[in-house]
Structure formats: structure tokens, C-alpha cells
Length: 497
Image 1: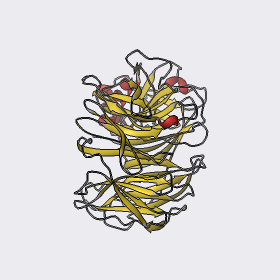
Image 2 (image 1 turned 60 degrees about the vertical axis):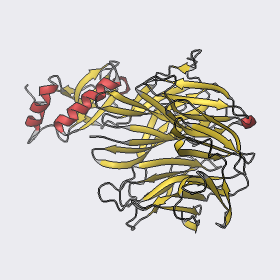
Image 3 (image 1 turned 135 degrees about the vertical axis):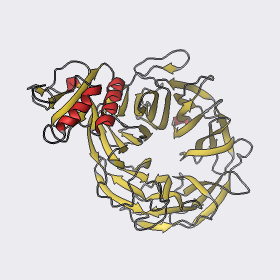
Image 4 (image 1 turned 180 degrees about the vertical axis):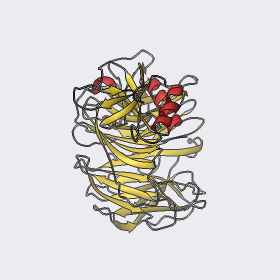
């Protein structure tokens, strides 16, 4: 069974200057990092998680300044949308440190009844309100662009419909209520939205027969402010897509994306003229772009580098004329990619992404959160070729219950433990988990990873049959007590055996 999880990471711009790299996942989860922004003390992560019991629930994860997971909670548990939120994860911040997060659901078999949602989080990560697009409607809503205004209002753009899609864009008030709908002609596909330095709302769209890329301007009142055609037709690759557009403080616009033959990044003047344009060789994607001081530009994504089969996460910085100052590759796993970059107050970078573990049985990907210094270095490990061996610390998103669990085995790596837990779950239809033994004083303290199952009961009807089936593949499985007290307790699955 394929499981999808989406991670949207947020971090405090003024957080500590230490660097770290951590991956977050669970025994049967596929996790992808999608975005980062400022929040309260330390860091936080917004997660869309799929498992056996839910197609997609947004979660808030709290992480300290050293990247250690502190706690989790579900966002919008009583949302009331037509379907669970399982895609998206765009995040935008307000000047006061609060943030909005956008998600949407997938239509799946019916092709209908798929809503979208924007949630507001205060600076401490507490859910303030939530607004659902498409509630009690039979359309399919998707959010492709999200922009926060300084007064607390925001703009959402995307599409609705299944098969024949129509664009939509609207301004919402600071409480999440719809204020003004923006008029966008049919046939256009809105790729992103941002707020220009002069306060205009800019929608970036494709699908116009006379130009491959246009941006539409609107006043904050919703009145159309003009239509600008970019002069990029001879520069953009075939089958290009826009991943992110950012309005810069000098009135210019930075845009990045993907396409064939390569990912691309550019800076445009406010009139749509190219200031500079660059494309990377080979496969890959430039997912996110951010403005730096001195008209410099940072971007992140993934690249195959010099023709290798592995895809490496990448962070790069360009000067004001589009000359690459440096490019740092981060390699771990079969496919490593960054989806979003934020510039920290000390000049370092916070990056959210994922590591594809497709080479490991039953493990597809882990969310990746990396904090670098201003040179893009993690733990001062780098090579002249620009490669940084990040060696991220794995942290499990599974929250072990307080009580008896079935210990399936102890392993030296989290990957081995998750494989074992996943296979045991397939054999028993119980919820699996993975934990680091030294974190739990009721266990032995041995430095290893425990693969476990959560039993619905530890005796009674059916328990003997379940244990007999489990012991075929895990003959050493036993019950162990998980708790915060020092007392260690364990017992055989079947007393007397």
C-alpha cells in the first residue's frame, strides 16, 4: 500500500545559529517536506499524514533549535470537509509571526467533492481559524498559489473542476472570510500568486495563446491593474512549469521552475523584461526561490549533477547579474530534494524537502529538515566539489502509547526497524511503530531502534491466534511496557510459552 505524507516546515528566523539535519518519518509512512516559514521559539512543522486509518490529516510538529522533535498535534480535526486534506502544504507568514497554510483534498474515484482549506496559525503555532473552499459543493478545488498581505488578509489562487478546469483567485479578510473574487479569464492556468512591493496582487498564469507566461495585476480592491506579457518565450524550456514566484523589494520578480531540458530560474523587471535567466543542465527541478541582500538570489531543488543516476538536493546562490556564486549538493538516499528555502536572520538557510528511500524495502521517503550556515554548510562538512554529507538524524513521527506493545525486534538503524515493523503490521493488521530505546526509561537503555506493534488487547479471544501467526516471522517477539517511569516490565506474548 502506498502511503503519502506531506510536510510543511516552519522555523523562527532569529533561531539559534547551530546547524542540523533531521529526517522525520514513521513505520509505514511516505513523507515529503513542502514548505518553511517563521514561527515561535525554535521550529515547527505542518504535516499532512496518510496511514492505514486516514487519507490525510494535517499535523503540527514542534521542533527545538537543534532540530529535535518536541511534540505533535492534529490540525483541524473537526474540519467537516468533503474529504481529508492530503495535498498542498503551501505556507505564507505575516509580519507578526503568524502564518497561513493551504491544503486540498483529492477526488479519487468519484471525481467530485474535493475541497481545499486555508488554516491560520498564531505565532505559537496554535490554530486560530480555518476556512474551507468548496464546502457543500460538488466541485474539485486545488490551491496553487497563496500570498499573505501585511494587514492579515490573504490571496488564494488555483483551479476548480474535474476534467475541464476553470481558474479561480480570491482575496480573503483577516478572519478567513471571502472578500473579493478576482476576475480571471477562462483558459488560463494560474501557477502562483504574490504581493508586489507596491501592494499589487500579481497572478502568474500560462495558457494564453499569444504568450507562454503572463502576469495579471490587481489592486487590493480587486480591480484589474494591468496585464504584463513576459519576454521569456525564447528562453523557457519546453513543457515548463512554474514552481514559485517571489516579488522582490526593488520591484523585480524572481521565478523558478522545471522543464525539459533543464530546471530554470530568472529575475524579471516589473515590466516583464528578463534581467537574467539561468538553466541547469540535466534533469531536476528548482522548487523555491528567496531574495537575499544586495539583489542576490537563493534557490533550492534537486539535480542529477554530472549525469549520475542519483538525484541530489541542491542549494544555490546567484549574484545581482545572475552569476552563480556557489552551489551546494546534499546527498543521502536514492533521491534527495529540497522543496522550500527560507533565509534566516544570521544569513543561514532553513530548507524543507525529502529523501527518497526507494532502495529500501517498504520505505519510500522521509521528510528532510536542514538548517545550514550562511555558506550552505551543515556541521562544517563539505568538499571542494560542493558536496555536503549531511547524515541526517532520523526521528520517528510515531507516538508510542503508554502501556503494553509488542516488541518485534531491535535494530541498529531506523531503516531496518521500520522494515520489520511494516512487515509485522502486514502480517497482523496492527498499527506499527519505531522508537529509539534510550528515550524511554522503562526500557533497557540499549542504543538501538525498537520495531513494535500496538495491540488492541493482550489476551482474550483471538489473541493466541494473532501471536501464533506473528511468531512465524518474529519468533522472539514479546510484550514490553512503554512508560516514563524507570520500572522495566516485559512478558511473553502467551503466558507459559
